[in-house]
Amino acid sequence: MTTPLSFDDNRPSGGQDYSYSAPPPSGGSGRMPLFIVLAGALFGALFSAISTSDFISHLDRQVHSIHCSFIPGAAAEIGESGCRTVMMSPYSSMFRDSLWGGMPIALLAVAVYAYLVMHAGRLLLANKPITKHDSLYLVAAALLPALMTVIYAYIAIVEIGAVCKLCVGVYVSSGAVLVGAVLAHVNAAPAPSSQLPMGQFGRQFGEGVLYVAVLAIFYALFAPTSPKSTQGCGTLVKKDDGSGIFIPMGNGKGTSAVAVVDPLCPACKGFDDRMRASGFYKKLALQSVLFPLDSACNWMVKDSLHPGACAVSEAMLCDREGAEAILDYAFANQENLRALAKKDRDSGQQNDPKLRALLEDKFPKVKGCLGSAKIKNQVNKSLKWAVSNALPVLTPQLFIGDKRVCDEDTDLGLEYTIAKMLEGGGASSGGKRR
Image (cartoon, rainbow, N blue to C red; front, side):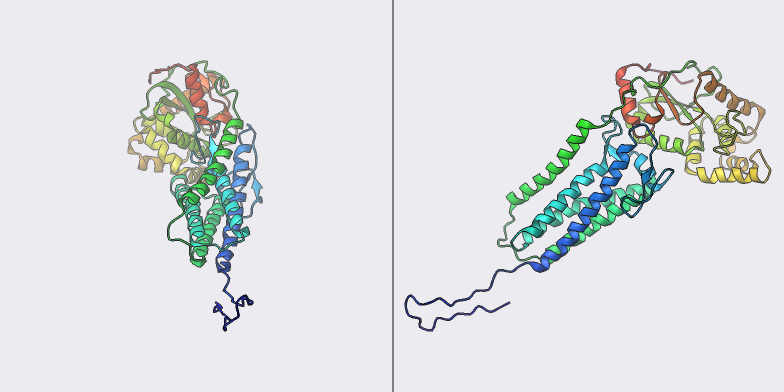
């Protein structure tokens, strides 16, 4: 810092003033980290926007590729991926019973990062030093995406069990924003006053809220809708359970519902996760009908889409009281169970002996029943029930009362569709389990 100089050696009155004062601190060292904040917020907005675009594209009732790469916009693919699993999970959006598919969390992230881009850019362009008050608010603003990163990373790893590369990109971006904000605060110039400018902080916070509110309201007003949600896609011809094939699931009461599932079907597992995460699981008297897509017992499929599903279905029918526990076990170990059955069949053993031995060891009550002619006949009756109702050969399927939920509404639009069907009163309520 330059020492102030003064030349006033008995100047005559009215003489030239040669005094020199140091300029105010430039705050340059506090400005450099702002570029980190700006870059992190830009990438965060970009990753979030791509994720939002993928989410919205899947609401048009078509099959689309999905981006799943650490490089924004790269690696769009059709098929299973961590990004698809996260997107189809119940945690990817909010207000699902009010909006078809709900409001994507990624959309709100776009608004937050866009605000941070604007705020960091404004500080960079301002013709004044960055003070501690400026940087303190920036740190506070950066803490929001950082906190959400911790929460959603935990949900992805622990609750969903899948990692989305786009999400990781957002996590890294939020970390960069926070690091840049902290560095900016460390290097910022002293504040002109020790009193916090609460009015200024309030205006800046209001700006951030406005960014999120405007984008959220705009999306809610123009969100896609599902015109078939209340009408459904077909009805049950034979609703009764004359053959005793329905398996009660959960302890919900209210409107009767039937889920057609394959215990080794990945889509059924995702459907079950969404049902359990929604509040409707306890509001429906839900029963399951088994429909294994396995040629070992299902004459309607030429190739086994899910080898081993027949054996697991038999186990569930053998032990009805423990059927839900067997289904949970099958959902949690689908890949291993399918691989075990495939290994048996590749070696020429068509009755899945190793898989059946595993099920008997895990669930002793099915011993002596699993593989018997009686229980195989029960599986066959389940398949005939599907035929009598002219059901398509796919899983999962859901019926609210006697109305079939459209296939495209069993994923992102599930909660909205169930809510509309129940509001419409078209589904019969108070169904009894058999």
